[in-house]
Length: 330
Image (cartoon, rainbow, N blue to C red; front, side, top):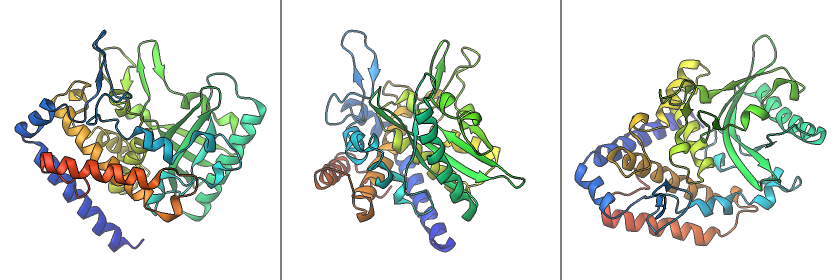
């Protein structure tokens, strides 16, 4: 991609994003969304707890979570022969790695076979950094035992004096007292790999609640709509917009941008700030999924392409009719 084209695309997308945020600044518009239960979560009738990984109605924020499953079939991820051919959702951007980095996920000791698999897959990414200043993309932490395929973002580059740096971002990572979700702590240990790798946990820059020392949460902790692939991609998009610099200041700025609004003000309840976050992210979800589903090079092993593209386009059409916002042009 030429710099002129990338600069033009950035300017166009950045300006349209500003237009969307300006539109959503209207309390009457977000008030209408709250009234209609738009981009909503599921509220348990017994506990009152709000979650986003269960769809309660056609306006649910997590309405397209099943499309992720169609784009990244678990049976393909767990198949060592097929998964190497699976196109990454990041394939919609020419500056991102077109395949997934596949790693094992466990909270127990890794087996010798799992260590060997992860070393081989990691070596492929590190080798690619010899031909580029950096390699960035999406990694899948797979677990046959838990029947899961969780996505994170990564950025890898070579150190001038030898060895590599590998920065990673897990949008679902959080710590609440003794409760925590952070499988990356187990996966990214230098002793597991043959190369000399310095791992950089970018979740250290996620929002600190201030209630308990050490508590933090990344964006998906609040809105866990099983969009981890798109949350990770959004991080990489923002990093690219900020110049794709391999500096701590840029990483910190990028993490902050993933919250879209003040992270202290986003909540699972339908507040103005939370609606701004959800609608902005829904715009990104629709655009990214459509770009991936209509990309011919992405189609191997992807299922229900026609049905899912039709679903997304109809949702976008209905959203514009109701709120006057075209999610594909913002």
